[in-house]
Every structure is written in C-alpha cells, then in structure tokens.
Image (tube, rainbow, N blue to C red):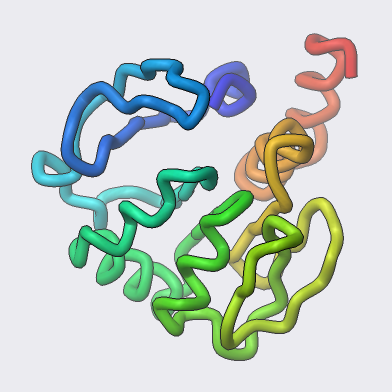
Amino acid sequence: MQILRRAKLNLTMIGLTDKIVESAQKIKIGMDTTLDETDLNKFDMLVMPGGAGTENYFLVEKLKNAISSFIKKEKWVAAICAAPSVLGRWGVLKGKTVTGYPTMDIPHANIKREPIVVDGKLITSMGPGTAAQFGLEIVNQLCGKEKVDALKKQMLL
C-alpha cells in the first residue's frame, strides 16, 4: 500500500464490510470505503491482500464475481500470501502460473515457488517478506521500470 501511494497511483482501499479492518496482529487500518459502496468494475486493477482474514473473501460473492470478470477480461489482478489460494478455490486460475504462501494449496494453477510471479495480467507474491517486491512489481507493470528505480532510490532499496 505504501509503495503504491509513493508511486502516486490512485488507490482506493476497500473493506469487505467495514471501513475499519483489523489485521491478524490486531492493527486497525482505515479503509476508504466498503465493498457495498463500490463499483469494482470502475477500477483498472484489484489487489487482494493475504493473511489470516482471506477466508472472509468467501463470504462475498460480489468480490468473486468481480475477480472472475477481471481475469476473463484480462484486467489486472494482484494477490499476495494466502489470497492466491482463494483465487484457486474460486476456479479462476486454470492454466495460470502463480505463487503464494508456501503452505497454502492453490488449486487449478501451475505453482512456481518464487517471490513474485507475473502471468499475463495476474501478479502473485508469496507473503509478508515479499510485500515490498510485490508493491514494486505492481508499480513496474502499471508505470514502468523508471518509476520503480526512482522509488527504490527514494526508499533506499
């Protein structure tokens, strides 16, 4: 999130049901809006964070439908940590090469155990330790290498 904001990307953080989301480490994060208040089709990319809360994605049919639509229309989808396993269980990864958290099963996909995997307009990443790389790859795909190089310099990476 911070890398995307530093890149000056127009970012909307969406809570599944609430504008305050609590992480597995009990950190409260303010969202810009909720899923019910949002038309997901207006976005160029959907990014699914991972972690313990990913099981909540299964409670929201609207998100599943939007992700399925994005993948069919070849619009950008990015998922990290446990989120790629959700995509697999939704059946939207057939023929796709992805990565994800090493202990997670990712059905219907070709698994490549690398920090970041880009397959067409699908970006996946392994987990918390690869989050910065994940953000930089999103910026790379949307803005190009020059922007990534400038961010790396700014962030001392």
